[in-house]
Image 1: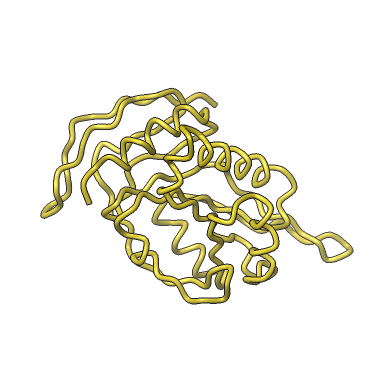
Image 2 (image 1 turned 45 degrees about the vertical axis):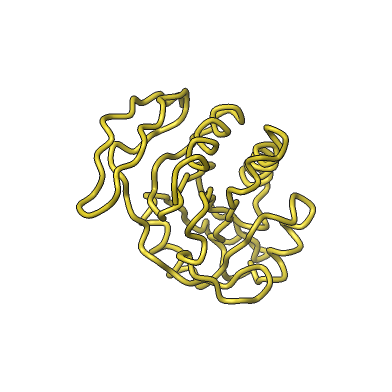
Length: 195
């Protein structure tokens, strides 16, 4: 699926500061208007409660995934690690957050073990599946648990989409199998914006 969409004029929501227009790049969807992400609280990979608003002041790249994922998550997280290492590591100021879509199995310890080999900078967030579903709805992210097999194992279907949130907590763009370079371009622009 190739998505190349043009960013429309830089309009902001009522009362919000204007933001720069992001460029239209291949497989990057740029929101024509800023979309504030409502605050939420989940448990991080260290077992601490963490509010999404605590990340304000830096861009955040959000990905919905789970530690038992056989293919989508490993590929996406390796790409996000490459993004963090791109441009001499200057993009590490942007936080990478994986929100679990499998709160039944993804304990903080499981997320920590899963993310640790990828990067010590990545943050895993987990909570009850119904809460994760409400959060995902804000991003228009869809996931569903498949029926379990005879051994009780199951898979959770979800997309590889990564969501770019600016320093003020607004959803500005999303990446759909975009190249590391295109993700880096958008991330660098969000880092350059004022707080």
